[in-house]
Image (cartoon, one colour):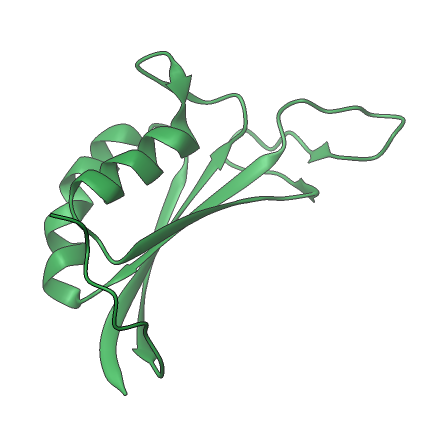
Amino acid sequence: MAAALRVRAYVGERDRHHGQPLYTAIVHAAHEAGLAGATAFKGIEGYGSHWVEHSARVVDMSSDLPVVVEVIDEPASIEAFLPALTAMVGAGLITLERIEVVHRSARNPPA
């Protein structure tokens, strides 16, 4: 097992960064930084800093569902990425957790 960090950014589906969805910008920034992996998860219901509830119920047809972007890598790599992530996420929430990686593919990032 290897020690790692998982950083999560909680944002809204409508949030933007330089004209593109914020969750997309975060995933691209993590990729450009050479981090091990990033995934965006769309929530079906939630609320955040503005205390407005968003849900995917048919009657609501919300188009601003919660999105969680999760990035995992070695502690030094995540810590180096945090300033860029913090600058991108405005009204969202960022969390950081220590985790243990029990399996990782042996593939190397493309040159």
